[in-house]
Structures are given as C-alpha cells and as structure tokens.
Figure 1 (cartoon, one colour):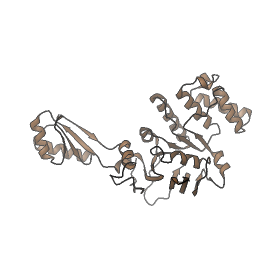
Figure 2 (cartoon, one colour; figure 1 turned 120 degrees about the horizontal axis):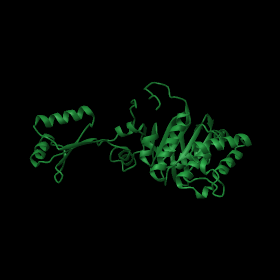
Figure 3 (tube, helix red, strand yellow; figure 1 turned 90 degrees about the horizontal axis):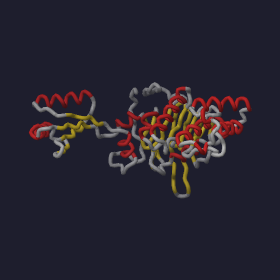
Length: 334
C-alpha cells in the first residue's frame, strides 16, 4: 500500500485528476462538480447507488462522452484538449464483456493488437503473453462464445491490456461472477498495480473496494460525499459496540445495572454496549464486569463495515452524511 500522506505534505503526482466535473442530461444533473486526485500506481474505487453517476464519470474520463463543465487530466493529458493522448494511455473494461463471440480467444487479442497497429510480431507476442498471464492459453483456439462468465471477464481484461495502458478503468468488472472468479480478478488487479498501473474501479461490491482500494470515494446524487481509505471511512460512522451475552438472568440484570445505557435483548440475555471497540476500551469494560463479580458467557465486538458506511452516506442523512458535503477524513497510517 502507498505510504500515507501526512498533513502539509505535497500531493503525489496524479494519474487521474479532475476539478469541478459536471454533466447533465436535460434537467437531470448527473455529476454536480466532482474533484478527483488519484496517485499513479494506486487503486481508486468509486462507490455509489445505481444512478449516482459512476459510469458517467468513467465515460467522461475515458473520453467516451464530453463533460459539460470542469476539467480533467488522465496520464498527463487533458481530456478535452488531448483526447487522443488520453486514449493512447488508457484501457477500459466496461460492465459487459466486449468480445467477438465468433473469434477465438487468441483472435480477439490479435484483433485489438491490429487496431492498435502494434505490428504482426509484437501483436502475436503480446497475445501469447496475455493468454499465459490470464490462464487461458489452453483454450486460446476456442471461440469466446464457449467461455464461462469468469473466462470471458479474464479475456476482456486481457484485451484491455494489449496496449500496455498506464491507467485502467474497470466499470463494475466482477458483476455476475461467482466468488472464485471474483477473487481471481482481484488477484489480477493487485498484480497490475504492483507493476505500476493505476486502476480506477467502480463497483457495487463493498467487499471488493475494501479488499482492493487504496482510496475510496462515495458518490451520491452527483456529488462525492466522502473520500478516504476504507479504515478512514469506517471511522466516520458511529456504531461500534460490544455485545455481552449471559447464561444466568441474575448476571444479566446485574450487568444491565452496571451499563445502564446498554441496549437490552431480554430473549437472548444479551446487552449491546456502545462505544469505542478498541482494545483499551474493551479491557475497561471487562474490568468493570470483573469488579462487579459478573461473568459473561461470551462477548463479540462489532465495528462499522463498508456496508454501514454506504448506507449512512447514501441514505437520508440521518447520521449527518448524505448532505452533499465531504467530511474531513483524518489521515492515519494503514
């Protein structure tokens, strides 16, 4: 993972940057002035509910559609002034595989190589290399129409890499894949980043963002409502608690008097004690039980996960988020 940036340090060079990016379709505003700064060689995940503007952001940054306002650069090229420079430096994998089902896996790769004018020898070398890299060399001569969903996705990503792009846009790349194929894709993304590639990822799988992303932005109603590492975003959401369960009703009632603010579960004889779920706070809590001579049958610790973050930030704003403002996220080492 990249070294955390401390307050006052200059921002690292950006592979993707945007200021005030806007897009509307008629009277519907899709992007309402978003700012981005994505360091080279990192994974950036853009989360948001359906219709939040994730795919529109990818389409603008990859020069597929024009923005209505703002400016952006990708791999050092302005998306409006130098779209050809952007296209030469990027690869895009959309929500649906862009394969020619009548061609074999190798022929699909060679077709992309021809479109990029790599030359016969270089194109064949890249195709063979990628077939091996993605574990589909043994089916290189089979038509894409015969491939499973996971194999189609791997071939689709291999086609994106024929031109050795500096920045890759992955728009919900694992939608519809089984868990094993999804994890294979994750390993592939990690290997790309280890080689210096920058990955811009949109996803609705929160675990995917948690596993892969160095930084995450949450997009809601056309605005980025929060941004930070997964840990930093989780720290913004209240809800940490310790659940104490008892086998004896007497112990349960005595513990309830020790923690009068705890939420009760009379059926399971369990208390939910809100507060910091860190080690020091847990030690204090257990010491209070011990001092009162109370023994809990078991306990569990809950801290907010990205599901909690997503629901809080894209909900009705009851938690203080989802209001179109970006919370300040404290930089902490990962």
